[in-house]
Length: 312
Image (tube, rainbow, N blue to C red):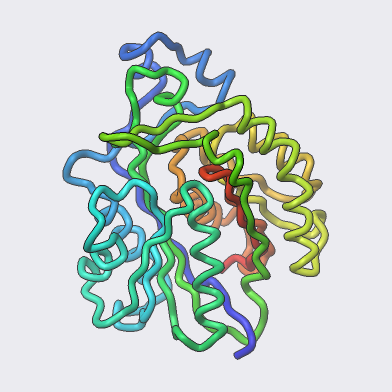
């Protein structure tokens, strides 16, 4: 085995849906204001009995079922999240316990909105190095629990959910080289701080950075995978805001690709957004098995990470 691949995907969203009209009854906003500025129509909200690890386990269980694997087949669990309340046991350990796994290595990664692509790269490296046989990689966040529901600039954005991928060894390159980095001096632009922790951001600064600085980096990701943007079948960016996703996708130059727009129905789910959107594209048959897709996460810390994968 000389490479790795994503063998299967899964996703989970809470049943409760919060519409723009619902939000208009809570803060000074409207359906038209939200759609015109961020493109979001609905978002899913987890209840008090749906902690981050429960959502993560649900998504992980679906990925295992799709791959036809038992929990015992997994020896590494990586969970990307920035909204887990407890420090220990970590979310990955709780997911492993919920799924009945025996003895996997369990680690959480907090790279906020770029968490899943960082975790996917980490799993790719671990499997290539031989330190793991098969990994369960999950992005899961409960953004509604860290939201100030009186702040109309942020409360209209967020949703809850989880997405999961099974990473295993393969004969060919199913997960391309990662390109990752950050802009530490601008880390204050997206924050989850305080007691209790609250999500805040400098929206215009993030918009300018994302739309101007990220497209050339995403083109470098394609080059590392030996592809051009025109070769891509799908582009799955962090689902932050439709007004960021659309111009960034256009400037990348992926003219033949399906662009994931799950943000319209799910809102910004942070680390969950990329695996959830990808899982839905594959489940609906919008991209063919083996087709190349660009995954590109960005956001908190002003971190970014991207890789080209072959769809399961």
